Amino acid sequence: MTAINFDQASELTYEKISNAMSNVQSIAADTARHFNGEVFPSHCTENQYYFDDDNYHGGWNTGFWTGIIWLCYEASGDEKFKKIAESQLPSFIKRINEKIGVNHHDMGFLYSLSCEAAYMITGNEKAHDAAISAARPLASRYRDKGEFIQAWGNVDDETDYRLIIDCLMNIPLLYRAAIETGDMHLDDIAYKHYLTTLKNIFRSDGSSYHTFYFNKQTGEPVKGVTHQGYSDNSCWARGQAWGIYGIALTEKYHYNEQGVTAFEKCADYFLNHLPGDLVPYWDLIFTPEDNQPRDSSAAAIAVCGLLEMCRYIKDKEKRAHYKKCADAIMNSLIDNYAVKPGDKSNGLLAHSTYYYKGNLGIDECCMWGDYFYTEALVRYLKPDWKLYW
Image (cartoon, rainbow, N blue to C red):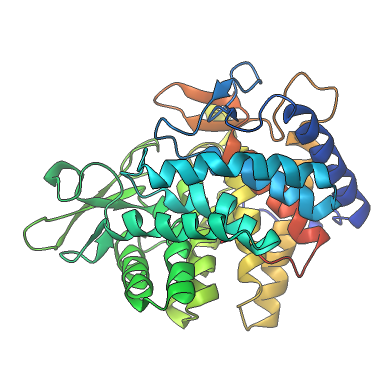
């Protein structure tokens, strides 16, 4: 695949960003007439429309919808968005209080963007307590042998004794909980998980495995494999994007040159494997000749990660380069992938791929793609925006 010359990308204007955010607010407000309170959108659309779901069946995506509404409120100041977001909080509080669907690592996706965001924006103490409580089941998945947070299954199950790259996005909940409670054990296990991930999940060329197994008895590394990617030796696009943003989020709490180096290798691999319109196929192994579907959600995640890491990279030229790359990708998302009011969809970002081999959400909208696209817009509109992670 020919490397992209990002210097030739057109300028990303404030007017374009502002208009795109207006479109998001219009669609979100319309969609929220149905999805409010305890009714949530599904993980991904079917025929471009989300169907009804709830917050009590162990799903990992509901926080993204509430996060979108909080972002719309912060961008607009419109009280209707605040009321919609607040109407969704009781279901999150109930879920953690009654331990409904918490036996997995995705507690950050669920609670950072819903309850912790509510606390940051409105000072809601009940929501804050729920977010802190959600850090506990996440912390309980930490395994001393191997020094990682187990992703799925019952803890210590030998068939699931592994981490996944996605968890880099969930450990900021532990960092924040440590700060808020003074329990620095939470910070310690989150950072150890981060270091274990850097050491094992990334190959020497900067590409990543989706998931990595460890020996339950000794904690020694065993092997990296895929789950949602094309093959064990390929590079799942969304996983690589989780790496870009996940590294940046830990650098926010624990700046380390090792992390900067890992970020650059991870980001460069992603950027060097993009097609002409800068939105990846669902696995980075593919080229245009393979005629595979895109994953626009991976592009949106990467934009957020690139913008976040620009806060911590000290080299001015590298900062400028990654900012230019983020701008170019964002231009393409707005021009070619964003849903516009009047389109036949109630999503925000079209042409994502949830799980290709599982025949799930192929060329559809998805909740996380919609969220990260909206977060990216807010980052451009409000450079001092305080992220929920």
